[in-house]
Length: 213
Ligand SMILES: O=C(O)c1ccccc1NCC(=O)[C@H](O)[C@H](O)COP(=O)(O)O
Image (spheres, helix red, strand yellow):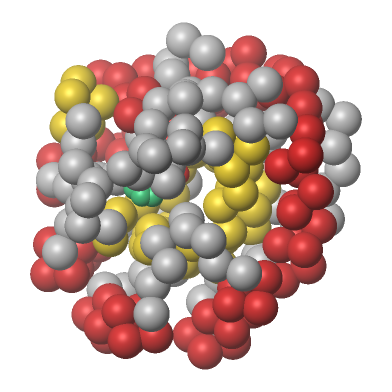
């Protein structure tokens, strides 16, 4: 099985280039001030404009207001919004209608009870990002390099496209795909040399491992 890959949290033109060259399907830009991967609107615009067609540009936001989204989308040519906060299903639907862009809603999973919320989001989002739930008190709601128990979703049937995320690395992504049946995977810290510093060799190794799993 070949999985489509999203590399999230790009901050430098060289890394955007590496992502495009190695065949990733999505490039993610984080708009969240507390993140080591945070980019300004101007930075994101420059990075997005260096990407070749065919790589979808995803803007990650956390509980963003309409004013914040207006400002981002006025400048950055995004193909998809990733909502990584506590956005309700109604807010997901509102954002989707207001901006006319596909919306991917991140859902944090730590145990089986967390799966209950998936149905409500599947009804309104274009895609679901099934991610590890951030630990209580964590600074970041995602991008923490933590995995969840993949067997929780092993037999799940999905009505919308979805991505697996959380603690994926070049070493474990093939097993994660095998266990969950994911056809799309998302990674950030697992392809970094340090928080916020993507490593081109790890990016290439991850995409290759996902493609040939
Ligand atoms: O990466 C961040 O800094 C971040 C900040 C705020 C919300 C989400 C964030 N990242 C999400 C991701 O990068 C991924 O979608 C996902 O959580 C997987 O991250 P990782 O476990 O580091 O591979």
